[in-house]
Amino acid sequence: MTPVEGRETRAVKEDSGYAQLAPLFAEMAELSPGDAAHAELRDRLVAAHLPLAHNIARRFAHRGEPQDDLEQVATVGLIHAVDRFEPGRGSDFLSFAIPTITGEVRRHFRDHAWAVRVPRRLKDLHVAIGAAISELSQRHGRAPTATELAEHLGLPREQVLEGLEAANAYRSSSLDGLLDASTTGIALEDIVGEADAELERVEFRTTLAPLLEQLDERERTILKLRFFAGMTQSQIAQHIGLSQMHVSRLLSRTLARLRNELRGEG
Amino acid sequence: MVQISAHPTELPPLRLVAADLAARADFDLDTVADLRLAVDEAASELVAAATPDASLTCVFTLDDERMVVTASVPARDGARLRQDSFGWRVLTTLVDEVHVTGDSGADPPQLGISLCKRRSALHDDVVDSALTEGH
Image 1 (cartoon, rainbow over the protein chains, first blue to last red):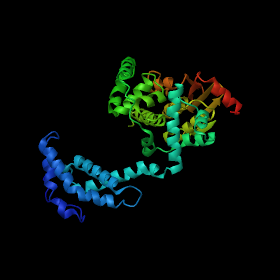
Image 2: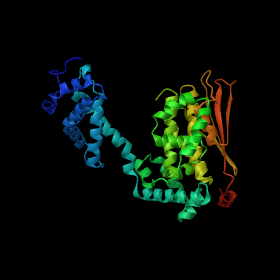
Image 3: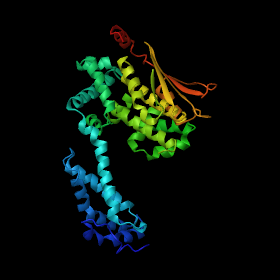
């Protein structure tokens, strides 16, 4: 391992205080990630650089996102930077960490920008439509149509169609959160078990299985229920406590991701 | 008929048109959501098979019973659509019928996917009310 101490560092104002931490990175790189000493050094490095993360978060203040959230996101960026930094590569930590943290904060803005701009009126409409879909699905045993929704809500059909369109146009995590309920408590294990058995039979299981492993559990369950257990999107929604519109968006995202990875572009 | 450039970033309008047509025709919302996903999947398959800078042509046909979406592209040499893939499983699950279409004799050869999604049989009453509304 190349000694890092004394290496030339960028002339960033905070540098003087942080430079003395450099040997700790070299020390951490020598340890295996499972080691308790490694975890301790990692915590120490993250804590010591927190002012840097907060400083970067402050530069993004007053853009419509709560400062607490920004600091949290910046801290996540800092943790990534500490984890990914390779002291042997020759650059110093700050020149690596600053773009990493800034990138994390920018990504946060990119992902949430839509959510911030969803007009109040559409949010309310979204909640009303989501609740009505759920109620009518349970009553009729199938998803409602736009006309049925409009009648149920006492709204013009055109407005319901607009709301449905908006649900798909805004890729918004804030919209998704609005309607999610706790689960119905119905045991899904049996249905997922059937889906797994079906998955065992398909020709493409060897290529698909490792990709499914990479999905988070909820996305994986939704995918299995729709494509290997034959449940409809509104049935899935009822079982796992999400709105049908949310299930639809998650499926859309998961399929796009799998497509990319199956083509080796992911 | 909708024509877009055969590129992954150009696909959103296509699924929007599919979903909006189906919702306006009073297909139930599960059917609408499935169609949206199916159009996305089919178009993505075709984009991957298309010649560089090609256009993707998509024809939507709607009647009282069903919606048929046929998308096609000029295909690269040797491009074909695998039917033993997860993508094909997705399509066959989402719609009632799916066919590979095309003209391998054309120059360049045309490759397409035709999707047929029926109104769910459970609600003829809805078909009636949609018809009286003039849809």
